Amino acid sequence: MTTTIDMTEDEANAQAASEGPAAPTPVVFIIGAGVVGTALAARLSRAGVPVAGVHGRRSELSDAAGGLSGVLASTGEIPEILSESEVVIISVRDERIPEVAERLAKEKRLRADQVVLHTSGAHPAAEVLAPAAGKVKGRGTLHPLMSFADPRLAAEGLKGVAFGIEGEPAARAVALRLVRAVGGRPLLLESKNMALYHAGAVVASNYVVALADIARTLLTAAGVPQDQALPSLVPLLGSAVRNLADVGLPDAITGPIVRGDVQSVERHLATLASRLPATLDIYRRLGQEVLRIARQKTSLDAASAERLEALFGVNTIATARPSPSSSSASPTRKKR
Image (cartoon, rainbow, N blue to C red; front, side, top):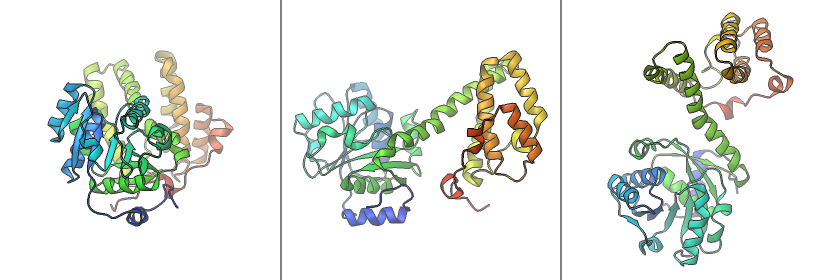
């Protein structure tokens, strides 16, 4: 059975239909009252998916989750309604997922006709849900490819978000159904690729925040008041993301490197070396990546590219690394 991420959504929907009826919508119970669990409870409920409850270890989090999502919240003993639900979503910290699965198995809370999903992007379901093996009809992954900071904002933002889906056939079918219900986009993954997939997610979210902090440091060193530096950068960051969505790669790349503005890059390197040497290595390393992308655009002339290559200290490996094909690296381009 095909489970690769290059499966189209139509093919994924057809597969889901072949693995089980499209109706009725399954009843869901969520364990974990943190940001992800709360956002999922709220979004699923608003999308018409019956959420029987959300359960957390801390009463204040459970109460807040119930208030935001509008579903029954609990703490302490796990309510019986979990066993009556068709889908159990475990949305706790990665290291606690096996612990929760083991508790459900030991307390005989699971039924043979249930599906258990977890929301970690780094681990295959067979690994972290091992205690549930043989006790349910399917174990799977339902990972929202989104940065979660505030549950209220996240609940609204889940529409249109991609979800990493992995696991046993019955679990994949249910996960696809839930993703369709909330207006998400499924990414079907193989178990062996989960860590690689999650690394890509971390680079796209956490590392961008780290880069924003470095950029804020540079602006502050340039005399911009600290309380104004980040607010000044946010629109710039947003415009870069919009360019990625609108024109894809490599066209979204802008700036002095793609223009072949060697003098500006030389000034940057000299200034960083003298005033903020700790940022010099990362500027050079990221410059290598920008140059690699810029080489795919016809606007960068060969002479400028060679001079930039020398400035960044590009080695053979960096220049020889193949670029992803446009079909796999670029988003679907919008009509302009």
